Amino acid sequence: MSEQHRERSVTFNAGSGFYRPKSRIVRDLGILAAAVYRAEKGELRVLDGMSATGVRSLRYWQESGADWVTVNEGNPDLLSTLRDNLRELLPNYGQVSSLPVHRLCLEKSLAGDRHDLVDIDAFGSGSAFVQDALEVTKIGGLMYLTSTDGRTYSGREPQKALRQYGAYVRSHPAVQEQGLRLLLGTLQQQAAQRNLGIEPIFSFFWGDTCRVMARLVKKTQLTEENYGWLGYCHHCGNYALPPWRKLSQSSCVHDEQPLTLSGALWLGTLHDTEFLGKMLALAKTWAWSDVTERLEIMIAENLLPPYFFPLKEIGYRAKIDLPPRDRLITTLQEKGFQASRTHIQAEAIKTNATMGELEAIATELSKP
Image 1 (cartoon, helix red, strand yellow):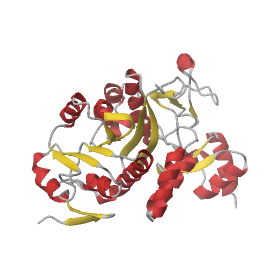
Image 2: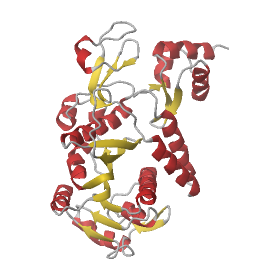
Image 3: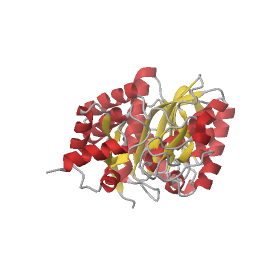
Image 4: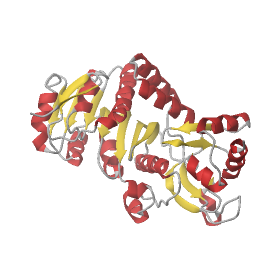
């Protein structure tokens, strides 16, 4: 008999399905966002495209208050486990199917069946399911997509990134954030092909996984300012955002060395600060303390540049033992810079200071 699990308020059996308890926080964020949406819109119809054990579907119904959940799992061997876990939900509040996601979304699209929240938690490149999500999400609704292909978004396979995302990305110290921006950029660009746009609700990096939730809107959001190129100078460690019209002239303003360019990708904000504030208030009400801490960091980092500086990179370049992260952030703020922790990497900071300024301040702080 399979082991019984408990996650937040729900109990279920994993059976032979994939279930990773450590990823609970990723599901927590989706549940919070869905609950905020339900409170604002008064209804919530969810499509869970790759349900596995059904824990997400069960939580969307029980914790977010979903009125209906379309539960799909492509592996038919898991159907009995799914139906057993969702016995309280079925058939009055949802249905279960076992179809390839592409076929499921095509059938829903042809039937004119649009959902308030579409969650497709896939392995590999998230780009494969962007069109599917766009087909079955209503205007104003939310899409929650995944990318786990670290070799691609980290710049180790730029040709594969070109095939899957239409972007050419290279390696640099902030590649985890690059993964989020690559997926958001693809979603934004493909929405623009339909004369639609997306607004990021939140972007979350956890372990080796990129998760983005975005709202589908009527108006195209893609511009030269929010969709473009990230440059990195391997010589001095600084970043730059060269405009489209000057790509051929792109070089580091600090030492005139050539920039390593990645793009095109999303350069706008990763999150919706107001929406995150509502999620934070709800997380506090539900006493989800580990989630509230993450949300507070995400709010603080949101308006800072589209990259971060790992502490070990600063220490390596300055040839010093770095002071504590929070002391460095406080000193930067006291000197008039913007600075924050980042949820993406614990031992890193986001700031509008240059690498040279970071080295100088860190060196001063490291003196006895």
